[in-house]
Amino acid sequence: MRHKNKGFTLVELLVSMTILALIILAVSGIMANNNIIFRKTKSDITVQNNAQDVYTRMTQDIQQAKHVYIEGYEVAYDKAYTFKASTLGDSVTQNPGSIKKYLKQTDKYICDNRDSHSVKDFINVDIRRDGNTSRDKLISDKSISATDIARYDNILTLSGADLNKALTDLENEDPAKLSIFRDYKYYTPSDLETYRKSLDSDALKAFDVCSERFRYMDSTEINESASFIDLTGPVAKGDALDFSTLIVDKNSNKYSYVYITKLILEYPMKINSNYVPSGVTVPAGAKDEVTVTYSFVKDPTPGKDKMDINVTYNYKYMTDLNTAAGSELICDQLNYLNYTSGGSAVYIPGCEAQVDYLNDSIKLNLYFADNSMSYKDLGMIKLRNSYILHDAN
Image (cartoon, rainbow, N blue to C red):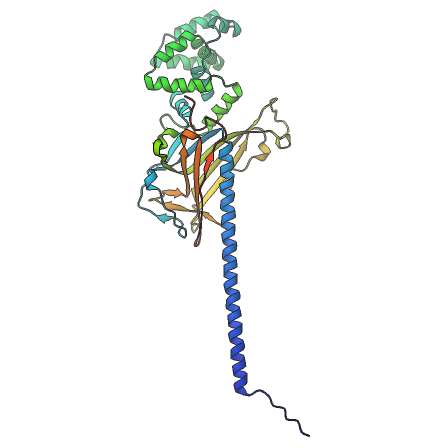
């Protein structure tokens, strides 16, 4: 018997190959689409994780803050900027004006009034004048000579250029004598009252608020305040606003927006001796002073259309934990803080804050963008330490 082996015809083979090609094409398309979705999802998750990390870190630092300083563009509450989800550096017609600086009321008062002497001297002498000890006791404790007493009494009669020259001569001769003279000048209650009566109503109110704040501070707290005010610039006389200026209408909770270009925070921290270098002496019972600086800067690198978030941590005693100046918080290749371009070399970062000065709170909004994905986080951050943004009055 003969067996007849019949193969595929050419038509059957072509049909089979066509069907197979269609199946392969469909599967490839599904796989490619899934791969695109996977990569986008992974990118979106990376953006969200990094954005949330930034927000969480800033929130934690703000919550702990004992001192707050802000630089940025102030914009009316009804003229807030829009940050497009898919467009970095979108041009806008709004002009944000110049960068403004914000301090709490007493810090601004010190910057505006301390003139040539140090913040610490201004707080200790001009603000926290001690009326509990007589001038006679000061003379005895400091062993002030009769010659110096006569010299100090003569300086008290001077004014204008003559006074400035006498103080300069005294400081050049012996800085310690200048310090003693300031104590000598303001050591009695009557001197303090005479000084207060010389102030106009607005200056008197500001002085009393400032005096009340520092009256019961110990030397450590005064040193902390002085170091914080010094590190903010120092802010030049008349160069800063206080946070109360951001209130538009407290009855309707309307506050101006500040688009932050720099944020400086300071807070205390328990000391871990493992991070204190050898040779550094820590006073008994002392806490560390941590200064955190956030800066939002347009990357100047050609082709880098992004806004850098830089953060620096500096410790007074645990210096092993200090970070290098301008350490970047967000990975260069991942996601970008969004920003708008408000004119030539004016970049408004997508770090938006509303300062609730009356309740020591900051509403912080961060805007990120990566292709078609944006991230926005809203929240009111309550500062844990009282009297951070306003003073007790």
